[in-house]
Length: 234
Image (cartoon, rainbow, N blue to C red; front, side, top):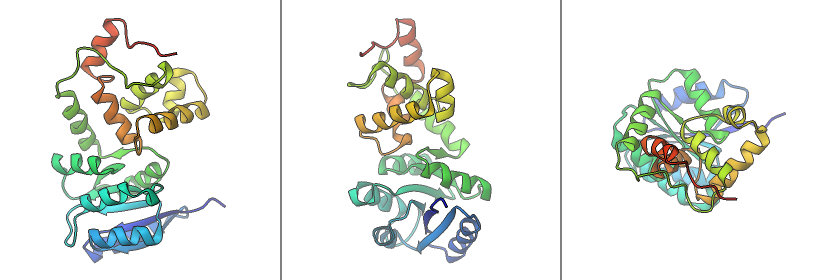
């Protein structure tokens, strides 16, 4: 039997914590490992329980969710724990702060239960999950930033790893990457694992940001392709 995905529910409102517990515990492959009502308690409970996923509220007394996410993400003993931020607000400052703190995704609290469950499973699988409206603005944020004249892949990547990074930046899933590059799912996962290691990225969300920051996706990438594309590294 496959091990259950263990979830820590963090929210300052008991009613919301109870609702989230009912949704998560209603699935055979998921289980609520514990609850917390403040950011400070969330960090302590994460250390105690070692959950796979933390459903993290943003605005809470006793230490906000962004600070708690940063502490969890910076702790090497919690390397296997991923944070999925839940918020009533889609303010850019929250999204960017959550990503910089190490969150793997950002979902609005008005999401359907099925969307929440899918987000938990995908985040656990190493993917990143953002509400569509948030992802659109997140991408626009990086496209609006000044970009280099042409694409400059991060140093140390092979040509194939650069190709995979571009596709990750465009939001393709592992299966879509295998189809685009005609490689096996195992090979795709190996390349993504290598990218995470070489770029010191915690998860796929940070790979997406790296792709934009290096001009591999967006206007700079198009110019680079026109100029002959990114240099190959054998």
